[in-house]
Image (cartoon, rainbow, N blue to C red; front, side):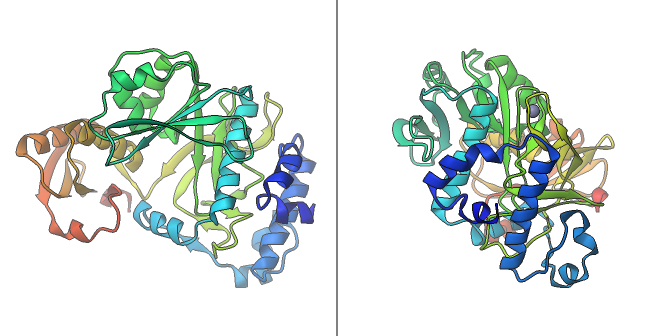
Amino acid sequence: MYHLVSKLFLCKHYWNRKKDSLIFQNKEQLFNFQENALKKICSYHNIVYNNIDLIDDIPEFKSCLKFMEMTSSGTTSGHSKKYAYPRPQYDLIESHHIWRIEKSHNLLQSKPVLVFRFNDLVAFNIGEVFDYMALGKNKVHVIDYNNAIDWDKAADYINGHKYVVMSPTEIQLLYQTKRHFSCPVILTRETLIENVYDMAKEMFTSVINKMRCWDGGLSFFSCPYNRLHVYDELCFVEKTDKLISTDFFNYCHPFIKYHNGDDGILDEGLCKCGIYGKFFEEFWGRRVDALLVDNKLVSGHRISVGLQTVLRKLGVNISYKIHQKTHDEVEFHYFGVIEQDDLNKIAACLSALVKCKIIIYYDSNLLNMKSKNCLVKSELLL
Ligand SMILES: [Zn+2]
């Protein structure tokens, strides 16, 4: 078993032979695998390891613990790049995700898959780009597009595919075509955004949720019974007062027991689909990347998806951050070239999301922002 863990995602032939043993059916199988995987990663970091249930009580472990706490999505993306997996391993783990979902949803038949990919340079281009490594028979059609895309034309292309992989922003844009499709859609992180889930459900035969976090490896997918299964073969997730995770395979990531700010209700048990493992009863996303509206958290991701939809429709490209100081006012800071009319439309969209007055600031400090990530912060949540 120890040997299995070290080779699993390094060699596609080895993974192909062993992949079925990564679906656990009882507590013993889960425990044995995770114990060995933790031993492996701990020995790599020179940390003494004893028993996974007692991981916090081991003094040697604690003293060596490289604990990392993230505070915003902006910093996470920086770390993700720095501590990324080597490319072949990344591809194999991604193939593994897809295989788990296809097996769970009975989608293993050979048929092309469709992926949408935002690309500044191309209005609409369909390319048959690659086979999924490790799966072999699944041709992947990629639609590269930018703000000039005709969504009606894109919709024409969807039927005939096994499933479509889309982002929540794309779902909102596609929804305006009022079309229905004869295949499922795989969405990333859509649990956080109920209205996007509803739109996707109306358009597609089913909605499959897939989330991958590169820091700490915390990842999940939804099965046909709508349970959010944690990928127990990729990460060890624990809930103390915080949600923390340890990635079993990312040796260039120097942190174990990693808290990236996500939160939720974690449980463990056997699902009707036959998988035994950890799952999220509820997943809330990031508390550090959210606003407080009517005493409820509205995630930064949800706000970002709402704004991105408007920005793409208007065809404008600006940097921005959102800052909540009181219950009555939210500040919108932006940098970039934009007409006043368009700015008003963005403010109206934001106002609808956060149900209060929006104050707009032109902010040249945003010029120094490393990414165009939406930065959402609330002083009411600090
Ligand atoms: Zn299940």
